[in-house]
Image 1 (cartoon, rainbow, N blue to C red):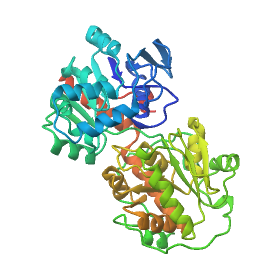
Image 2 (cartoon, helix red, strand yellow):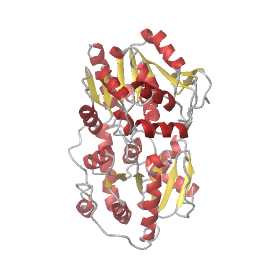
Image 3 (cartoon, rainbow, N blue to C red):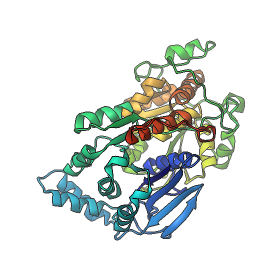
Length: 455
């Protein structure tokens, strides 16, 4: 089968968001199908400047066709236009102009898809928001799968997106929360639909970084070690933390008390001692980072002694304080080390459709602390019992203090998180759902997944 993935930008340097999600799916699908990725030459999304060379490339076993964007984005002008269009009456022509100004604006990609869509059995469009999906899905909707990666934001209520979701013949939802939001917001009646998400590579129980075989049994409920009754008592059932408020400095824990050994290299490299909270992704106000810095400062003033480590692309100023360490963009192996080195991974984004950061942290056995405004993150915490969520500054401080104070609680949540990811986000589970979607779209039974694809 020949499958095309359409995504606004694509590359191994992009380690977050729908682009990373798309790459992970495309690489697994390429093990059993001919896969092309159709994308632009942009490396970053603020301007959509053409940085990758135009033409065909090979990226980790996947054939990538890049097309040059016809224009760049003036972010200041676009933001002003967005403020107007989200708040005042306007026409469809205004929305189409907004879509073009948002970018990426790549007529060459759409022209290729118009000429060549017949050679593909299935088209998979990632992210509802951008022009390649809005305009590209119109070309051959009957053999197209939409992966919306959607959440409730001003843009999604524009008329052009009502038309997009009405035309979707097959939809791969990320979570039940996203599905419920889209079903109540749009006249969404796809011929085929699955709550899919994305696979997460699990590590062996010794934590040496090797993939391990998943457990086929479904997760009946949160797992709490029998020898840790106190952790079980403190593990939250509703996301509201129970425990003690700010406390004074604690001595450095011995290495043997940490989850695994692979995080020690990251700690040494970045001079991290004692407790570590980690954030990974775009360091951007839109991802909740400005609020994260303010809340973490309050946590420190209340007696908290953890260090906040940041990994990812810096798109805003970072406070110059001794308790923040910026690690920058990290290769995949070092990202795993960072997730293992952390005592807690913080996910401050108020808008998420899946959050691979949270799922990867759980897979590494690291509990998460999430923004309660993101319903998807609350869903993960409640279903897994592997994290807490906060609605305001006081809850952030209390939750982080509880997590940092109790090693046994963190270990129990770590086990819960690994079990949750193992039950719901193994690659054989994810690829089987894509098989069913493709079968439903084509009116044929789903093909069996090969063992190599599952791995």
